[in-house]
Length: 150
View 1 (cartoon, rainbow, N blue to C red):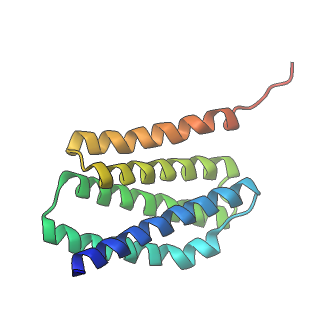
View 2 (cartoon, helix red, strand yellow):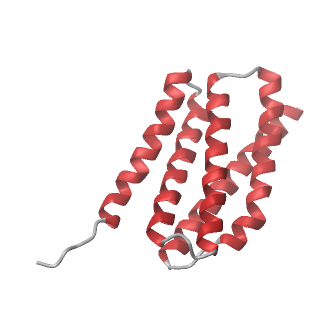
């Protein structure tokens, strides 16, 4: 067992925690409430568990295109999640807008998981993240359509 394998384990656990938090957020949005308290408590744990070992592993193997895209994508997930959480908690964001944000962040995370497993070059890494967002938002289109009476 090496320090690298322990870092990889913690990194994967952090990614799993992020996905669990996104799943809980989606569930609570569906129920018309917000999981902001739980996200505020466990979000930073996920951040540390993803970034600290991630930086260590990148230092060991060198920066690759997929690591840079993953870091930028994580920054987008964190920023959009914080923005959404604050605005939902203050009543300044509709459930529909929060759902779109949630779906986009889930799609970004899915793209990053693809990048971390397949390890493509820059174009492939960016395309995976974009494809994840498009796929996630495409799922939302039927749910977000307004049915107009005849």
